[in-house]
Image 1: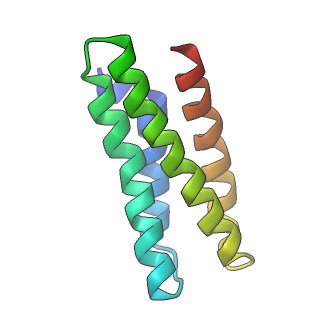
Image 2: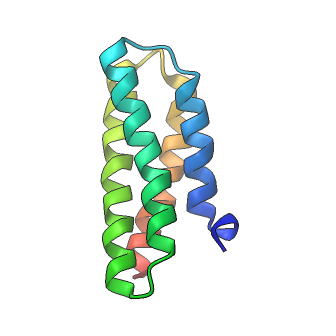
Length: 100
């Protein structure tokens, strides 16, 4: 089922893009932690049986998306190639949370 969750697929793609991003070490480390957190929390949340548990993990993923957005903004203009993927991911995760 996880491979069918579009938000998870987008999170994995964003993480792969983030890995290729050059940035000062402290921001790069934080970006990679936040980007991986999105995918990991979506994955864990998708395995939860109760709607409340799924929502909790999806909300954590959304928080990590917002953190990633802030880091991408701090890195501009050098992070232009991350802007569209994080925007798309943010919309998907937000809708996922709202759907619950």
